[in-house]
Image 1 (cartoon, rainbow, N blue to C red):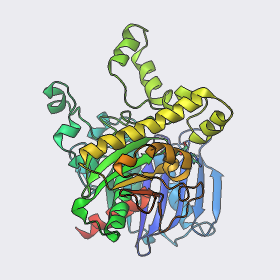
Image 2 (cartoon, helix red, strand yellow):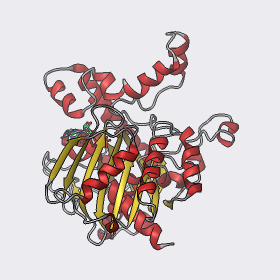
Image 3 (cartoon, rainbow, N blue to C red):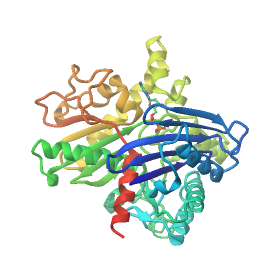
Length: 406
Ligand code: ADP
């Protein structure tokens, strides 16, 4: 059974076709700059055949068509016809409080995704466009929605409610939702299997997962359930990110408006697009560029890197308290999987929590075994793991699971 996974952004559509018998990716690609003159598709098959072309794609509908054409192409394809796609799994960012699990998409689900567009105006509308385009082209296939917020729906009230007047939550839905749930779920499941293999039963699992990519968030996962996470009402809260500021005194926003006379759109742009690693360093939002700038003596790049790691350490401490103990820390995402120096700094000084990095294992070129690389010392009480995240596979697995439950 082949599942097609679709992930739509405002001007892009990413896709991956996965054979669920073997869980092997058959092909993947991205259609980007949709609606512009520079629209193009990049496609790659599991056996290394690549295809790149400029194609006119005014919307997600044409992009989905292009993706499917590439998958069925005589030269670059991996399947003979559309019949070989059994189901489609869609990444959806916001499921509000309605969706704690993945669901089969029908009109009602589409309406709910549309409604939650109020809470995720940059993400849910393109997600919905992708769903509509795919359902139009593959009307007989089942389509499943997998929500970024769903995994965090198990957070207790004291973790998700802000200290605002109650009506803000009850009437306006202003609460912490959390994001990156599919990645946190995937790596915490993998870590959970690892802990089981090391004799720790599931009820004792106290895992802190750190998704450190361009967007960054952490989750506290107790016996398989998320009990807290760093992103909140929007993905702006929590860790320092590529261009987002993370935690901030909310009075700063008032100061920026009242005293500095900034308009709301300017503040919004600053906090989301011009802050974080980029804003602090003035160099780049990419940790690789900061590493080289810092090695040439750029002090602002150094501060940005220090602040990044400090927040991760601070939240590991906070989550050890929230979890009433800790027996595993997982690092993942572009930075977590590739940057051994940040990995070191993110856990430095946490030996009192049983977290001890082994410099001989935490090297630039990690040795993964089945997607997991332990980087803690053999005798450290808390397991320290780098795990390659795979949100697409998680979405495809959910799609199969939802279908088999029908
Ligand atoms: P996204 O959050 O967009 O999915 P990724 O998880 O792929 O992104 O992370 C992208 C980020 O990972 C880059 O912006 C960069 O900061 C970081 N990164 C990727 N490779 C490396 C590397 N070799 N060393 C340090 N940082 C890296």
